[in-house]
Amino acid sequence: MVKVKDILDYIDSFAPYNTSCEWDNTGFSVGDINAYVNKIVFALEITGEVVSFAESANADLIVTHHPLIFKPVKVLPADSVLYRMAKNGMAHISAHTNFDFAKEGVNTALCNKLNLNIIDVVKTADGAFVYKCTPQKEYSLTDFVNFVKETLDGTVRYNSLDKTVRTVAVCAGAGADYLTEAKEMEADVLLTGDGGHHDFLDANEMDIALVAAGHFETENPSVDLLMEKIKNEFSVECLRAPQTTPIKTI
Image (tube, rainbow, N blue to C red; front, side, top):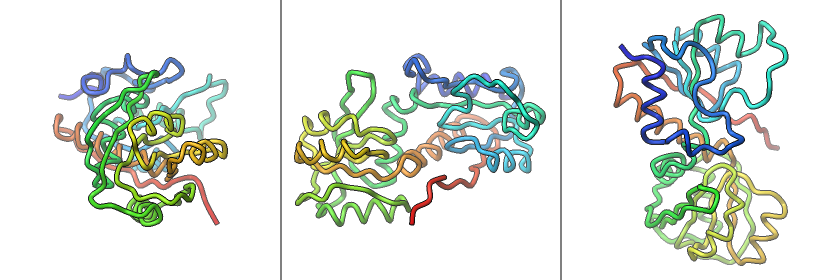
């Protein structure tokens, strides 16, 4: 039978945990690492709704991209997700920056979702990867933004430049720091999740389009990739928890 540790070790084989950022708290965080696993729930991150879904499914393990514990836990109330998971004997594993940095990880999932052809992968100084891609066809920047918006079903922010999109640099999540790398690979666009005010100013000065399509939206496809990998490796039932972005726009 499959144990929690078997799942952890398998993730480590394609997204090594020793590549995670020092500030990260990825990997095993809750439960019995030697417990047997019959049913796994997958989500981008753990919320009360995800735990409720796992409870109703009688899941033994929740696997997420984002870690559950980032700060010291000083109080553990009965309605907290940590207490509920411990009470129900659930374990938790996350694959965060190690999956961000994996060549077959978060960026791969986003490229596949958008039908982008990967032609190069550039490793940055801090260990991240930026993917150089070509779209299925040439787009105007406005048409590309609309395509991303419709495909990811989210809200997209971008700097309006007169660009024809032939080459796209991709770094899901918080990737606006890699404008320089995107420019050096001669990309017309850097597609990422988050972008601050000054990131868009920098992009304008560098004459590169910055398309910020949402942290949740750009990383959420990676959960399906993670689930597919584990489902193909182990004889366990795998379920995807329904989940949407916590951010509302008007």
